[in-house]
Image: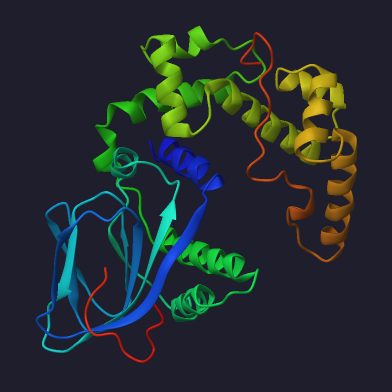
Length: 320
């Protein structure tokens, strides 16, 4: 079940496109509270001092120095100060294609996590604040980079709630389909076959699969075939034609996919990987060569006929 969850989340993160619309640092006085609202954008709130609370869909969560909260768009939410001293916090609002409220709810992401010393979130939030007030052409790139780093720190502290997702029917059905795909990449997979495994009509299965995974089934299958081929090329010496057969593709189609989505032929990919392995082996270590990995957004084309918190007093540091 955890594997299915990770695949769903990973595929959405691959296509993540987020843009900061507001970034600031604020100090909230004791007794402050902000009434319920349904903001259109997502919010990240990083508390650096004091104790407070955030509320999402009627459920309240305590926050303190070191707490990072992700408040999803479209959910009813509120926040306030819980203690007798002010709460200081960085916060950012951003638009994102993460998905609708239903998807976010199904992912069961926590609202708040505690950030350890491994993430310098203060620097990342300051970068977003500075970039928000910078008219240079590269400011949007710096802002996105800092936002993605904060999101990565948040997700690294998340834990999959197996109990919460175990009874979600869609995870069970998709899990069976994803396992079947992994075990039968060399076979002539059909849409009807995969839909049958999920006990769904093919048309509804396509819609569900795309909503949850982010790609139609045919694209996902070919993406997995490409990843399996990369692994075989990197870790074995079998001929390219055998690699193609092992992932259910013809040799010429595998070559076309590599050139289109990775930028080199399968043979060249193997050579680059081998040269890198020789260098790292000589240095006493082994790492995957990032230079020859496919771009995250690349999605193989289908094989014909086959599935072959705002408010409070703004101080001088505030930059809204």
